[in-house]
Image 1 (cartoon, one colour):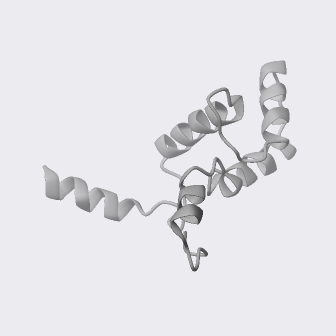
Image 2 (cartoon, helix red, strand yellow):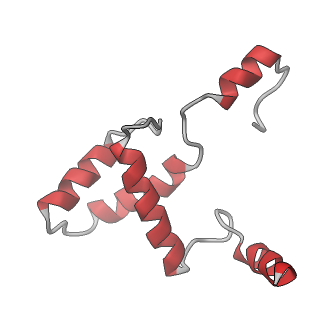
Length: 100
């Protein structure tokens, strides 16, 4: 949205219904680099990497790539290794502390 200028109601609606998933390219870049430098042991993992490699970062009801990305993101989140520019944990912790 930061790059959107001179929006009309029509172009705003187009943006609202755009199926492109912002940030997915950044998240998947790290996974793809890891896949290149790692031995992928199972055919299931190889198939998943292959799907993600060709993904255009668009989502739909039947998007297997989005499902894979969601599970990867949750696992990455749980690992507590997301760098601050992508996820500012201190703010989240502060908000949690304010609401408890």
